[in-house]
Length: 169
Image (cartoon, rainbow, N blue to C red):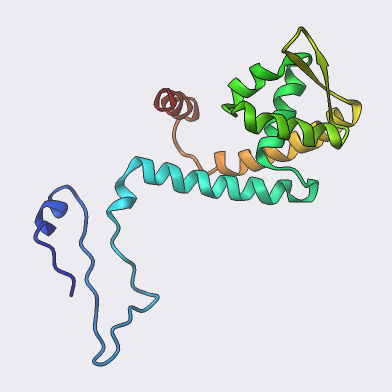
């Protein structure tokens, strides 16, 4: 049996303590047993688990295209803002310059993005025709993946998104 001197404190705030059954010589827990998890009551833990599930689905959706989530994010953002500065894209996606340059390079190599100098140090990014076509196809699939999870929500979605935006600041 698991013991904890702080068990009463955990139970006071609504957490259940786990107990481990022993079967004589074998101290294994069967699959029918579930660990009591104080983590399940924590907002950050729940958000992380939800994010992991959604990102996992998104990665599976993107796998046939051979693109990462970051590359697709860049395609979608540049597609919505043709001619935007590469540095602005990096800030919007919170990607460091050292990581953004190779990401843009991979998309350029595939013929999906072109860049053009704006001034001495800045580059503008625009999708090629192939980039726009791929972005449109991928965006439909990304939205379908997102909808799959939105359907599971039973609360006011706009309020949830506003609350999550507040937490992200």
